[in-house]
Image (cartoon, rainbow, N blue to C red; front, side):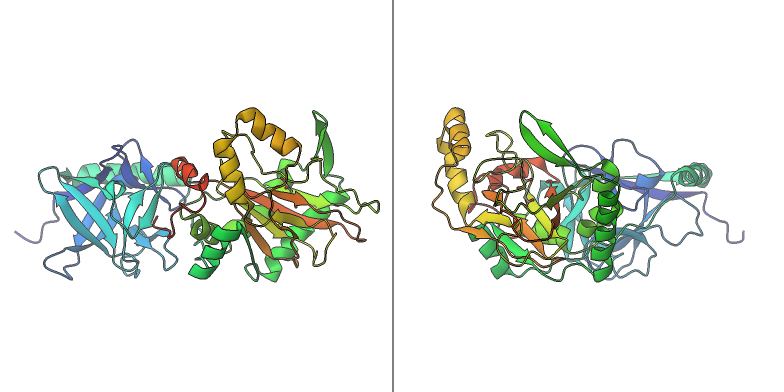
Length: 415
Ligand SMILES: O=C(O)CCC(=O)C(=O)O
């Protein structure tokens, strides 16, 4: 008998203990939760044997051709998931058994020193803390090679229709703990140098094209005039990638203390000069919060504004904040009835917070708490103010309640 190839291989699935969904690799190389078991959620575990007590393993998904090296679950140095070869520094995982009778295990990335955990939006993230979101039920079966070959043939067909693509490696947060603390106190912060000159210029060119085509039309609803840009501008990669292809996304997460979703829409906001000192904004109030309904407040996690022109003096259509007002607004939402709150907003009641017209240079990024009262300053300059705004949503919607009580939010991003 020569060296016969094995007739079967032991394969594994990782099913989340919390919702019975499988750890799967998606077409865009995101580790995500799938309802059904398939080739992309069936894994070959290879023991790397770096530590006899706690097995260090690589996780190779079954799908695709054997010759394709990039079939290993790995974590990048920016803590994002990717499909890589087995030599990738983030491809080593420590598998620890939590409950032997039920085969419950956790997976800890050796390079990131953090556990893989599920989020309620169907993705996975890393967490430095162990919680029930990190528990998987490990199932193992011996699978005949013939079956594996059939499964691979199917997966090749799938990837012909939806090719596996590179996932962008979101850059890490640039924020220091003191900055996060100040944001929690004041409800806003300005970050500089997060965007490249090319990114800023691409976004500006897109907006200029829109202006040339007359895309920035005003619409009126119930007497409120809104500047409305068509989807092809609001959702253009030049605008949306300002968030995902810079540290803005992870800075937002660091400020909020929870994972956020990559935005799929934006608000392009031009504020035109009005020499009579009127502001170029539909709302007549002196302050407002976005989604100010008692039930929708903080439905998004953080407001992000990217300045796309210079407005570095007062009265240039500046984004204007009421320093620390997120604390006051939080109390108002808690204590006032729906009618009282509505009246308070409509009458622009005194918040007893300093009103600050923020000064920004092109490319500066402002982060604001969803309960922070804000306004648009008049523009008596001779140039239009350009900005793009984003309302970043939680990956886990249940985290919203944290933000309704500023001061009680997580101090650290654990997800
Ligand atoms: O354009 C701005 O500076 C702010 C706009 C704003 O407050 C809003 O759209 O709610």
